[in-house]
Structures are given as structure tokens and as C-alpha cells.
Image (tube, rainbow, N blue to C red; front, side, top):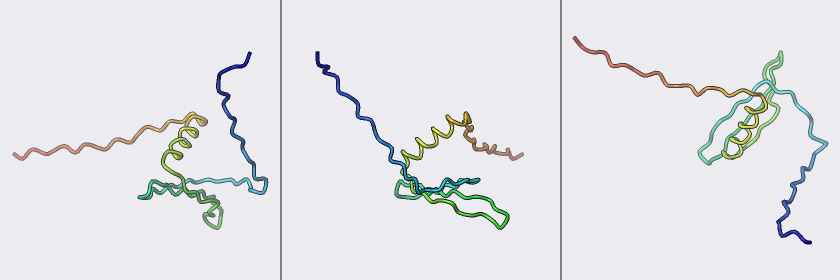
Length: 91
């Protein structure tokens, strides 16, 4: 008996064996006005910082990546709250 269920197509991951594996110490992210984020990965060396990689990432993809990083590291940073300014009463 044939199944009427649609089979989910598996996505293949194509590995580029020529890419080096890099060690990075720092991640910096700059937001742009076009919905992309500029990500820079750097390594701290005795001579200074060495840029290892630059990546442009759309907002939705960056959010998914951050979710994976938080999940895998079991680290969920708390959102910083702005300090409330209290008005001083004049006497």
C-alpha cells in the first residue's frame, strides 16, 4: 500500500575541505540599516588583534545563530535594564 504522506527532503551539507579551522577570541557585531549585520571574528595575539573572518548575516539568521550559541553553551544573558531617573523635588 502506497503512503500518501509527503516525504521530507533532507538538506545536504556540502563541506569545503579547503577552509581552515580558526581559533577566535572575540566576536563583534555591527548592525546596518539594510537588515544585515556585519560580524567580525578576531584573535588576540601578542602583536595585537588579528582579524580571522568577516561575515554578513540577515537579522533572522543572526537570531537563529544566537539561539544555537545560547543553547549549546547553556548561557542565557539577562537583558540590561535602563536605570530610572528619579526627579528631585525642589524645596
